[in-house]
Length: 143
Image (cartoon, rainbow, N blue to C red):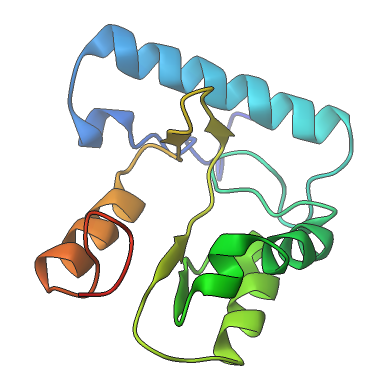
């Protein structure tokens, strides 16, 4: 889109800092995932691009999560405010206690389990602040 009123796509990579080649690779992977979600028509409003995307099947994913040992063991669940985690937040509110399990959205997940988010580092900052406040420990449970 160009011309008056056109929006520049949000780019958080430059704000996050770090190795430019790594930031470019992350950006390319995000674009690949967003393109795939859009092409498969599984992205929900307002679309996949430039966000932790909401997706068709988020409710089913939340149901599957509730069946995991981590969910059943958790006394408190913290879920990010991304649209895709709304069913998780609803379920977590049914058993509100101190944080034992953190659920966060992502654009992609590596084979090693590490998440790739939108690029702003907001989820990482939130997790770090909760850890610094003693609400989370390195083992994932509340202190």
